[in-house]
Image 1: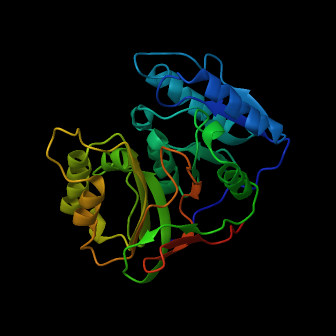
Image 2: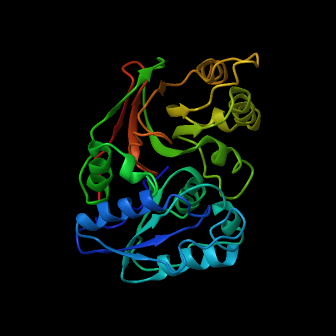
Length: 301
């Protein structure tokens, strides 16, 4: 699979647009403090009007959220798009959606429900960043914040270390995302081609049987037969109630993925609970299933 287009590196003074394409904003203090992290770096942040709009559990109607995304993407002065939070709702605005031609591509940064936007953008040939949203950035350790800034400003990443399951070493195209959101993209036009892909998956507050159900769907769909490696981040707060007979989430992951015959690394530091190390979408990486290392190539701009 060819490498994706990386947007031009950001630099202090650039304009970034803040949008809420998914769930309604609730964590206002964390949001404001994360805004200040970007501003203290020298960036100009423009927050959409009515960022606190609510339509049920969504941050406004589908049309309003779709217009937010389109306006930010087409703004010639905007160099990056920061998502306020995840939740649910980004897939709703992707119905009949095409990424407008806006000249230079720009950064899209988020995770969780933003997975759908990142994967849609990837199918359009542009790399985004699976990284903290503006309700979680402030809770990240300094190294994680710096890692995100380093990547979008044109520097390289240090490798991430996890637990190797074996399987040798493979090079492939990194496709990070939330397991639940990604599972609901199976069978849709948003799902990218998976040949030669290294999936990087994480999740939160999903009981082990739900993780089992989703991974079984991936197996039955044939999607897992196409990927060449799997990198697993945090699966946090995924314990079953103590009164319910259950496998652990670790046992489910081993059972559903351990027989694929490909390199797998688990316990990598990305996901819903800090740290959430930034991962670029669509870049070439090396996954070492023996040493437990995910190494990302230097960006080529």
